[in-house]
Length: 88
Image (spheres, rainbow, N blue to C red):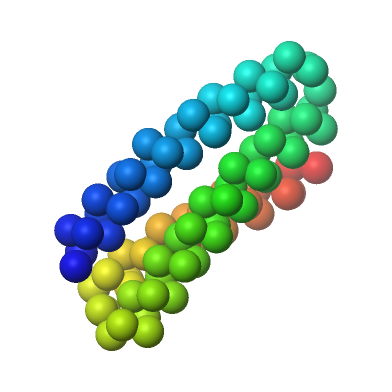
């Protein structure tokens, strides 16, 4: 199961990468701090929802190692979200 979570997380990172690139390109075209923050938060919150769903599914399924991995990734994402909000 840990392998499937790892594969899912790598797949999500690959799927999210174009979103990050598009968000950053869009923000840079406007050149404002608010657009950059908005794009960053949108991406981080999308990742947060994905990671929370994975952690919840693993917890409900009794997959302890998978849950711990997903929870750690969710925690790192939470730190990133708080840093982005704290930058205002």
